[in-house]
Length: 321
Length: 254
Ligand SMILES: Cc1cc2nc3c(=O)[nH]c(=O)nc-3n(C[C@H](O)[C@H](O)[C@H](O)COP(=O)(O)OP(=O)(O)OC[C@H]3O[C@@H](n4cnc5c(N)ncnc54)[C@H](O)[C@@H]3O)c2cc1C
Ligand SMILES: Nc1ncnc2c1ncn2[C@@H]1O[C@H](COP(=O)(O)O)[C@@H](O)[C@H]1O
Image 1: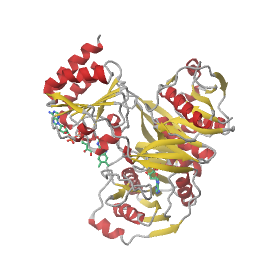
Image 2 (image 1 turned 135 degrees about the horizontal axis):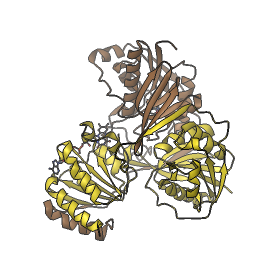
Image 3 (image 1 turned 90 degrees about the vertical axis):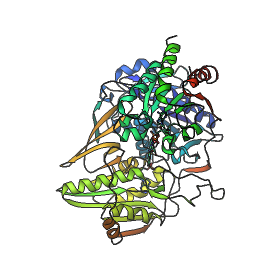
């Protein structure tokens, strides 16, 4: 029977939410070719407790405390060793910072095609849908090779429930060659949720007028409780009001949260590239002709400086219960 | 390696990011009419970084390489106008859409080039693979760093910063290496008129290449599904109550 390999992602020794989405995507792909799903996790020993009862046939756990941080070559060797053991039609990897680096390495080592940033599985055998031209078109790709690496966009698939995969612990293959070394991960001082991982994103644009006014955006995000992150348009990042890590769009991050709130953002085509697949879009803008209203589900036309404080207060009341 | 730095930069011709995409029902691809083509924006960061590193080293060579149709000569000329020394076009009318197949051709060209550093963009804004540079690194057996938003290179060693979810990874490596470039690395220079004039005389070699059969087939290209029709729920603060009602009762996200 054909098999699919789902590559899970950990951070600080805990499985990330995206791993459940990868298992779900792998299952969908498996169903299109009547295959089973195996999982592989790479990380420090402490990760093991998160690996019980995953929705897969089995889970290979490559465990070593030297694998705490993402070490590109070592992770690639770990996946390669399992992936090349035979029978895998697809290696499914999250299109996160880690997976976008790891996927191409696996494709090169297995000498197989790579189908990147998949958002849906189409009818037919191993046929996948992926956004191209910054989301302005959708490409449907059929894999004709024996094996392919597939990276999957976060938040595009609903996470799989639990199952009863057995866990097999193995060592890192000693043939692994380390050419690049991740020396450290610098975390920002106020460790906030990343825009690409948040289920709610509140973004501000040039309409905020100056950096200090972004506290209105921060307050609205905070009112939603712990699930919201602050995003920004490129105009305000280039102006130095916000860090690039918050930029949403073609030269920033691609997000598809459950709720995206765009405040004082005109909705340039490069901004839409980063957020048009959000489930619900709300826009606040004083220009009723702003292009952001073209993609918004709900819009308020008016001055954000009047609207935001009222909106924040009402939302805070609801989330406080 | 002395102070001489020999750097290759991979540059791709892509539709401008403002371009409205129309699908050509005949070819099943995009309709290139009325689309303006540019150097892939991330490749401009790569060209700029190469030029700055060469200037800092004092001596060296920056070679720009593109895989594509004859029209990619224009892309190479733009990079030459920024200051690159020479260009190589790997010419084919059927440039592969699979990044592995594209990387194979690029790696074959780079293999015996004696480059200290190979730079590419992190992503081409047409195909959106975010892959080609790293596949090239693996095929050549070189250290590969993707999506660098900071880079230092000194006496045969490199260090790069990569933005990851909620942090910045610091990655160390030895040259020769492949680095793919992200926004934040630098501000690409605009070609001066003198540069544009000089670019016309710089060497640009054209080599015919034949891509291997690709392991994927593009079976459809469609416009994204239209978002459901939205509505303005109100003006000014009067819009807040109906917005909250809609988020709670219709969208059920609150
Ligand atoms: C190659 C390339 C890549 C790019 N990548 C990105 C990207 O990744 N992300 C991105 O965002 N952009 C990107 N851009 C830039 C993009 O084209 C726009 O310039 C940018 O998105 C505009 O930001 P903005 O909406 O904040 O500002 P503006 O376009 O200036 O819009 C400000 C909006 O605020 C509204 N406003 C003003 N005052 C108020 C008020 N008091 N109350 C309510 N509303 C108010 C205005 O009506 C206006 O609509 C890119 C551009 C290029 C060429
Ligand atoms: N046909 C090509 N010719 C030259 N460079 C390319 C080509 N395709 C991709 N690249 C390089 O690889 C980078 C990433 O492209 P991609 O993996 O397709 O997103 C680009 O920014 C270019 O630097």
